[in-house]
Amino acid sequence: RYPLWLRGYNETKVKYEVKVSLQQNKLVSLLARTGKGTAIVASLGFEERFLLRAVIRRGVKENDKIVVIMPEKGDPRGEKAFQTLKELLDKAFPQIELIKHEVNVQDFYGAISNLRNLLNKLNLENNIVLNLSGGQRLLILEILAAALSLGINAELEIETEDSSVYLTIPIKTMHQLKLDRIDQEILRKVAERGEIRLKDLEELKIPKATLWRKLNRLTEDGLLEKDRDRYKLSDIGRAWM
Image (cartoon, rainbow, N blue to C red):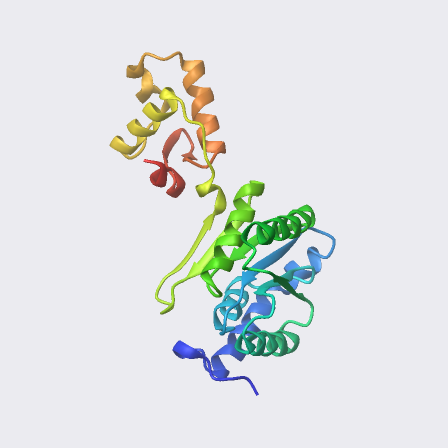
């Protein structure tokens, strides 16, 4: 039997959502067998509900995998949560690979090195999603530090303890970007006006070719969004203001 889920995730709802998720991803799974899969790398604590909800919410393909990060010699409650997760995923999503990866969380720098090697290998063949909704705070920090130090283009997702907020952002939001004076002036103008066109920046007295190049780079870096000839701040851009 499936356990009863917290916050409305009862047995009937889980079965229904799993069925819908599999139906929606059936064609995608067939087309993606030889393509790049997704690796959900997740910190796990004493409850499997956050990770299971993430899998159901996202859906899975045949070459996807879930990598569960846990402390070495951890609490038995964590192992129980992993076994419950494994049992449920084996029934609902038998086509995906579930991997348990343990690290010595007490050795902070050793754990980061360990996780860097893991993420580096996964990044070669997978799009990486970091689910940091559960687990020890120190373990979460080590995973995040490893990902940031590699500069990988991963997606970060997190759910609050009471499940009232679910957030997913590109991890590059946390990467350092080198913005010069012109970049900052352009972003400031966009923030002031809501959206701009190239001609709206003529008052900056900067050559049009330079402005065009800057707008393209800011768009490529994810700070601006382009719709035809108009530019506006992206969510990442708002974070940088």
